[in-house]
Every structure is written in structure tokens, then in C-alpha cells.
Image 1 (cartoon, rainbow, N blue to C red):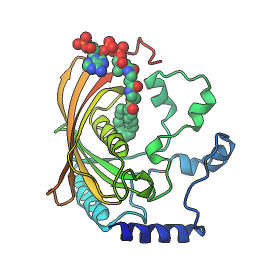
Image 2 (image 1 turned 120 degrees about the vertical axis):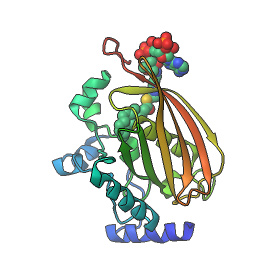
Image 3 (image 1 turned 90 degrees about the horizontal axis):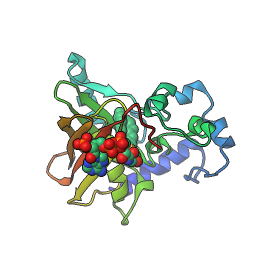
Image 4 (image 1 turned 30 degrees about the vertical axis):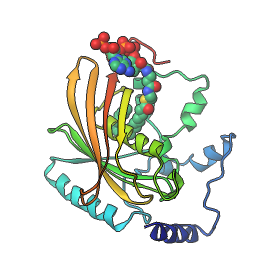
Length: 232
Ligand SMILES: CC/C=C\C/C=C\C/C=C\CCCCCCCC(=O)SCCNC(=O)CCNC(=O)[C@H](O)C(C)(C)COP(=O)(O)OP(=O)(O)OC[C@H]1O[C@@H](n2cnc3c(N)ncnc32)[C@H](O)[C@@H]1OP(=O)(O)O
């Protein structure tokens, strides 16, 4: 598995014409401004196949796209940045508003294949989502395995995708049952269990593509933001 992952990486880097895979990190936001200033990049939908997607991920993606044809399922698009309206909905006030303009969803901050590759499908009638997730080599924890924090992040996003609207995670409870091999594909099935005023109770499980391995189970409590309160 890891060998194919490394081979995939080599081809990604070769395509880019460089072997230094690590994106340059800097506190100076000017380079980021230049990198992401074009409309095309800002509005690119990242929840679509790219060359780093494994056969498993592409196959599952195609199966779910078929399910979308009768309207029972929809693919949720995914952008690096929240729209101005969404930021307003979240009523977050930052010291530097310019930083908000440049900030991006951290799961979309890696180059193709290196970090979080995922797509979420939603069934509105059944109040559930399915997230197909391939964790890349920069998400390593124990050698060869996906970092638990990366899994927790994806669980948070998968559960959040069942809520809709402006919510925040109040509680996340995860049981890690089996380690996830790096670069493998997992399926996160999430559902809304109960709605109680502003409180949304959700749960999910994380399984292998063949459903034989149960990697994790989790529950989450999300709170609908009160428009009268500031979240900071
Ligand atoms: C989120 C996803 C959204 C959309 C998904 C759509 C597409 C998916 C694709 C991409 C989306 C990207 C998603 C990114 C996901 C990121 C999510 C986060 O990381 S959020 C950051 C981590 N969370 C926080 O920082 C939250 C910090 N806490 C707070 O800000 C506040 O505590 C709160 C949660 C906003 C609640 O504060 P409020 O003042 O509004 O409510 P309260 O009156 O305190 O509580 C209301 C109600 O809820 C109960 N409660 C609150 N917290 C807990 C808790 N930890 N455990 C149990 N119960 C709790 C509280 O007791 C009240 O209950 P009641 O009295 O019965 O009404």
C-alpha cells in the first residue's frame, strides 16, 4: 500500500517538475495572496477526482455519482474558502479581516494527493452523508498509519456535513478501533440522530471500502449558532 502511495507521489511531483514535495510555508501571506488570487483557484471545486485518487476512490465516486442521478443523493462541492455570506453567518470577528480573506479550510490546504482527498455525498431525506476519504502521506502519525488527529478532522467535517447551516462542534467523541493505513480509502457514514432545539446529535462510523474493517466510531454534538451571540 505504502509503495503504491510513494509511486503515486513520485508521479505527482514529476508532473509538477519538482521533487521537493513540501509546499513552502511562510507566515508572510503575500505569497499566498499571489497564489490564490485568481477567481479560478478560489472557486475551484476540490471535491472532484484528481490524478492522485486511487482506483478505489474513483470507483466509489462513480458509484455515488450514479446515485445522484435520481436526485436522492447530492455531491457536496468543496471550496478552499468560505464565501463572504458564510463568514457572516458564522458571525466570527477576527482581529485582522484581511486574514479571513486569505484563510482557507485546512483540509484543502495540501497539494493534490498529499493530504486530505475527499468527497461528501448527502441524502437529505435520510439526513445522512457518506464521505469517501483518502488520507495522503503528509497525514502520517505512527509510521505507515494515518494520524488520529487527521481522522478526527475528517470525522468532524463528515458529521458537520449532516447539519447544514451555521453550526459549531461542541463535543466530539471518537473510539479508534483499528489503525487506518496511510493512503488507503475509508468510508465515513454519518447520520443525524436527534435534533433538540439548537442541539444536533450525530453519529458516524468509519469503515474500509469492503466494509470488513471498522476503523472508528464517533458521536458529535453540534450547536446551531445563536445569531444574537458572537462566537468569539
Ligand atoms: C460545521 C460544519 C458546517 C457545515 C458543513 C457543510 C459542508 C461540509 C464541508 C465543509 C465544512 C467544513 C466544516 C468545518 C468543521 C469545523 C468545525 C469546527 O471545528 S468548530 C471549532 C471547534 N468548536 C469550537 O470552537 C466551539 C467552541 N464553543 C463554542 O463556541 C460554544 O460553546 C458553542 C458550541 C457555540 C455553544 O455556545 P452557545 O452560547 O451558542 O450555546 P450554549 O447556550 O452554551 O449551549 C446551547 C446548548 O448546548 C449545550 N451544550 C453546549 N456545549 C455543550 C457541550 N460541550 N456538551 C454538552 N452540551 C453542550 C448547552 O448545555 C445548551 O443546552 P440547553 O441548555 O439544553 O439548551
